[in-house]
Length: 457
Image (cartoon, one colour):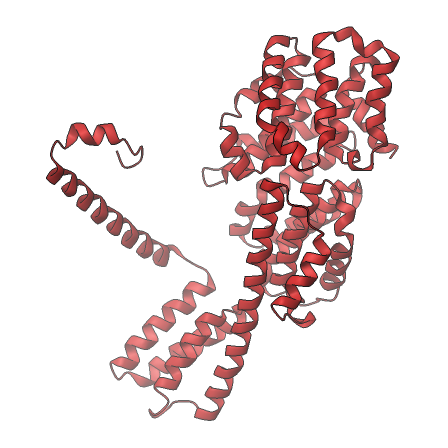
């Protein structure tokens, strides 16, 4: 009942208002017990250094409170070394405050040294807080761009934010801050479908990575994420060789820690498959995605699985394989879910692809129905975000659906080929959509057409 939020079921089970109160009291108790259970399980099963440091802090405090001073300080010393290595400034703050609180006991550290470390850690905490606030602000702005079509110059926005929160250049030269900047830049470039816009951030990232010979284990998540963004950037710029080299480097780091291998594996496979497909290894790319989906673990993020599924659908459709119809039926979530979790651009592409796949295999009425639904749902958004080119493309598809032989008319072909002259249509995914129309009159698979377009641009 809680899982489904079934109000009618609740009314059948409890007739009076008093019994409804009893239900909600039980519901609250269950929730509290589940939270307690989860917290205990996390501590029992958590094997990361941060959990170890937290355990040592709890034990150290308990020992000091019960006059087991020597062992208590030993626990805190070990916890501090771990927290310092992990750059866990909030945890360090707790540890140092506890040490200062018991600095009067025999065996405690020098008070002046303790307070000096505490004050330095306060500065580190403030620096990290400013970076996190700036990152949160930029993420919020990104949502405005993404969902409401707000027009923004990314470089100007970044500089304004950095000045607003008084962030120095040195503050930006950490794995975490580079990751945060690249995350924003990558999302912005994806929305604009123009990865040239973020080239300066990529160049700075390359300089940062090359200048770090010693790599801390605590930075592993950020380091792997940065390599993923770099691989994606070069893929979208059609530099498949460099993209592949970053993916190889990424895998080397992933196998070093099983947690990160699980977390990043599907994303790594997605980019690997895209690199294979756009370098004329379509069969290998399809096999890789099928293998990845069949082996996807229960713990895998739904978003990663949906990404693989839509990519496999695209590959099969471009190769004129009817298996793409089956894959479409497995993309079962609502448009609202896709818009929220995957973004507007992803959802628009998914809906456009559905129209094309149905048309490709002669389901013309269904394709026309999907086209009309698409126009009703997204026309206003596309006009607001100055994406009229999508509506122009939709009209070309509509003409084909109404009269398939129109693709052999020179005026129609010229209208399609004109789409290739627009710089914003240079993205590999946009080229795939245009290639689908060109393939109608060239009597080739769209895969062969898009590979030809990618190679000559």
